[in-house]
Length: 477
Image (cartoon, one colour):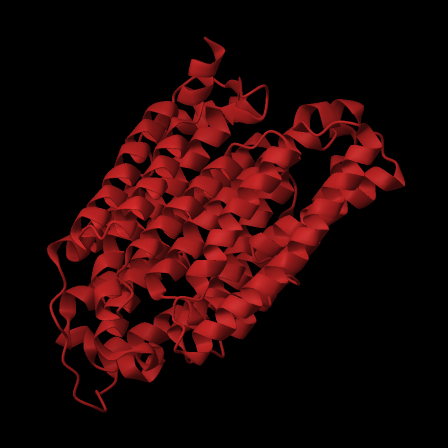
């Protein structure tokens, strides 16, 4: 039956949503936090395994064309759940150390993940908007968990106000597109669209809303303050899963909604935004002394690299973006995980870079893992970050965007300074104060070790189950 096929098509999202409701009920009936945490991790793991199976399923649509199945959408669900699973696993230690270990937090993570999964498979402007808001509202709550800290209150307020403002742009853009075409299904919009001022204005406003969610310049102003004030493991969740879901939705909009006859207009616009995002993100990151703010501006720069792949406008470019999202999830969750370990022991002020002086030898395993993740973020071989950048930049070269790639390579080279600066403090600066580190749990250490191992492995052998998938994805556009 059709409804059975629809449920199976979005089964990972349904599993996560039901788990979110279950966690809320368990918390209301005062069940132990161990069981709540177990249900959260188990549901994400089950959904992740289901999404793995969906990677090689047939492409199509479900729920009367509201969502896509297989291909790009399935890969988006896989990456979202990968980030959500690892962020949740490393959160228990951190939450216990910062008195945030309660059921509502895990429920919000699950509801945000549900929105991200819907966003990654949206084939209709209505489902895109509903999924985006489901994700955003939960993230607004998560950003304000540190109520007693000024940075936490600022993060929640700034994210909520600017997020609501960007939602207005997005929704008004959808209204104009509907007014110009009479439909909201992405492919139906492409078939009905004409390059009228109404359609162009609607599409531009829609893209403004998307640019805000991926923190592209000039819509990036919320990112550093929100990342700094949000609990660190949840910052990793926002920076990876939320960004991955939005980029996958962006790919679906570009490939399914925008008419082929006018791709040049959007390509030129994407090139300009990509240049601004890469340059501004890297330049401001150079001046940061707070490691979380540095990684926030770094995430802005990485959004610029991803936009280079979108600007290519080819199957190779979109495939490169998908692989980069996978790579970015591994290395960014790992980097924030190590920072969360340090912060859990010594508070929020421990994110200042001079606090890391001498810790590379005091905590050698954590120091080495942080170095691996930072090397990968800088795009230094043989890490997975290098392969991700290679796929994206090579696609842009093939599309003839040579000047854009030159700027991207120079921006990436500049980023090496601020990543290596952290390692200089870890290994080449004397500690200016005595610090003691509490041991972390087996799950926490194991998750970070797995992320570090995957970061190295897929840099040396970048083929995963992606061996055939990378070729396969090219046929989905």
